[in-house]
Image (cartoon, rainbow, N blue to C red; front, side, top):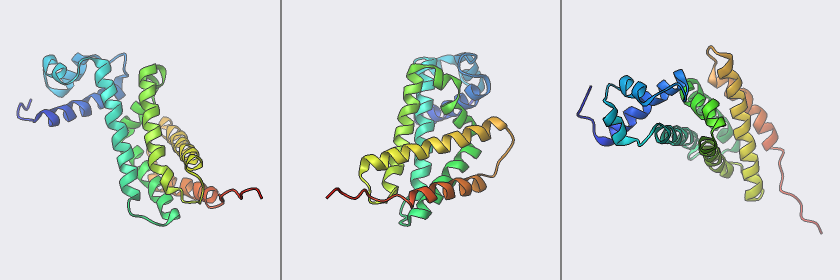
Length: 198
């Protein structure tokens, strides 16, 4: 056990260990003892950073969600072509899912859906992802329409990812991203601003 980590580095280490432990055993079957043991720390050290298992799980949902949104945002930063934004956004997302299956399972798995507080945290992540995507839909439509379409894109991506993860095995994230970005772009490029009634 390293005792020389800064408080922020120790917190991140505990979040990383908790992610793997929760993904492997599930929320209800995982105890704070399990996480402390896996991290090589004592339970009091764990409780210095998180008041309870619920607090830890909530922090983990927030952390994982922020990382996912940051991945998509960074991939599309500075890109001006609508098609390229679509392609890069999907590619970044599916690479994230392929490389962070535990994180995806945590966000969209059982405990996060069945618990009201955790479900609210996941909805917040979904809303943040849609808010990040909406401005990229440059189709001359109003912001509310953009946001609705952004939520549809998030739902499309989540549904496809859920199937891939539940099926098991590996998948080519770039191939899947290419398929879905082509599908999404075909729809997005056909959107036009409504003509005002005369």
